[in-house]
Amino acid sequence: MMSREFEIALNLLERVKDRLSYLLNVEDRYALKEAVRTVIDPVTACAYHVKVGEGPRKEELLSVLLSLVREMRDMKDINTLKDNVRKLLEILDTIRQETLPVGEGGS
Image 1 (cartoon, rainbow, N blue to C red):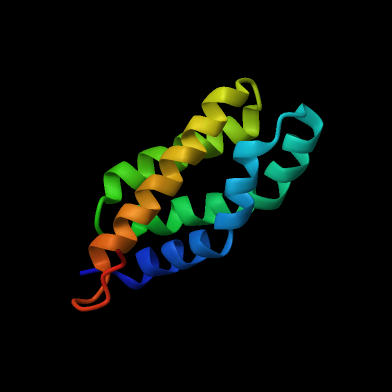
Image 2 (cartoon, rainbow, N blue to C red):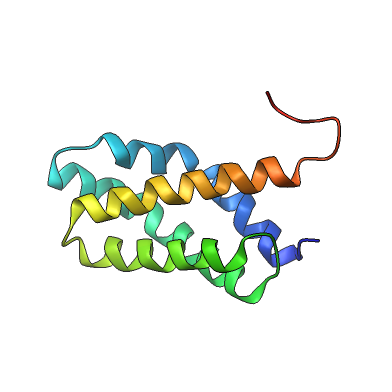
């Protein structure tokens, strides 16, 4: 079962998923900073909603979100930031697959 707060977080992450994916391909530090500015607020909001909500893989998702927010604020290690984005996208896909209603399975 998933709480409303957790559901809000997942839906918001789905809405910024393309922008998060874009971060993985940016090489220029300035362009990366600009791209981070477009997602830092939604990702921070998601971390809050996951923290107060209940849902699958909550601790794993919260850990990655908090680490990602920290990396986006510091912008010290681009590779760590990209690794956290990659982990977040993988966890998001896993949660979506696990929570699909029976009969709606993807592949």
